[in-house]
Length: 64
Image (tube, rainbow, N blue to C red; front, top):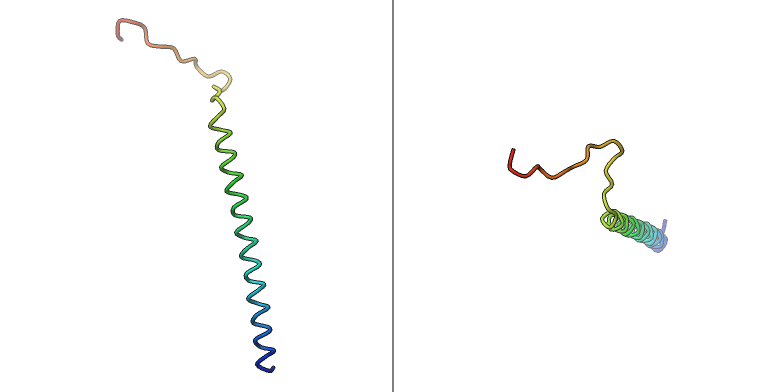
């Protein structure tokens, strides 16, 4: 294989690697945004007590 062909092959491999890296970065960013959005939505929702959970009441006045 001639040196120009070797360089051309190396350039193609570099370009493919760069494209895979760029796609992986885009996917990572999309997933991070989705997780952040889900976390923000979860934080905005009031936490519901499960069915049948004991109701919390304040302690009676006067101590124990």
